Amino acid sequence: MRLSTSSPRPDSNSIHCSKDRQWPRHLAVAASCALLLCLWQLGAVLVDARIILPGPGTVLASLVGLISAPPFSLNVGMTVARALESFLIIVVSGTLLGLLAGFFPVFQAAMSPLLTVLKATPVMSVILLAFIWFSSGTVPIFSAFLMGFPIMFIQIAQSVAGMDPALEQMCRIYGFSPSLRLRHYVLPSLLPALVTGARLTLSMVWKVVVAAEVLTVPRHGIGSRLQMAQVNLETSDVLAWTLVAVLLTALGDLFFDVLLVTGRRLALFRARRTVPSRRGE
Image (tube, rainbow, N blue to C red; front, side, top):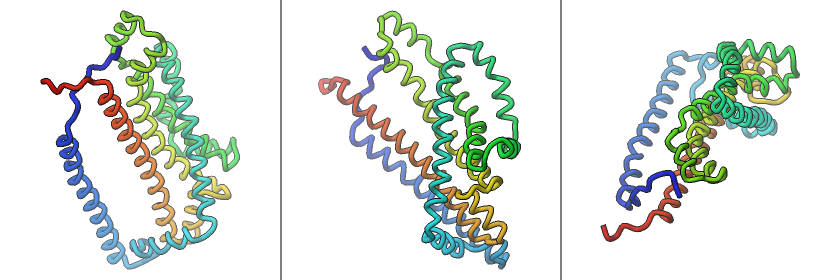
């Protein structure tokens, strides 16, 4: 037995209409990007000083030069490795502790002082303290964990607290086994919060990891290259490495967008297989 109510199968016209409605959004995004580039170019022309604000063409040439150099992949790879390591630790620990906090209010009350401290502590303070305690390569991972953990924890805890008690009662009435309860009640209730929390956490992790690398200057990393470019007054390289960091964040957002679309399509596929045809209506 399924807990969710079945809905009629969407026809092809509704799918095409949904796709058609996406075009204005895509055009708005493209127009916004073009406007930003124009403003950037205008600012560069008015300032007329590459050391202060190089134009998009100059930054693009610097980016191509950085990509063609052998250390580029190593620097990006080390930053990605640190970010993903911290992200995985946050998702696992934040999900498990968030579940405990959601099901046991006493545990949530015990965690509230720690969460308050983590949310109120400036990022730079965390990075500087971590630099005293750990090596330069560990500081980004530790700092990103402390900054991203509250996001994941709160998302999961609030999602558990907001689970529908009527569905919980229905599970008991119909004698659902633990596996069926997990599959049809717990996971569908927590999945939106899990995806949202993971997405917000990854965006935070990128920023903190790069900021920590700027301050601690490990041997390889995007933040280290940013710091070296700033010291040498290579503004175009600073902006080029910044674009690399922005692209990594955008790729993370794209991953979760694809994940959500795939989830909707899988749900639609399951609905088409389970919902009986209503041709006679």
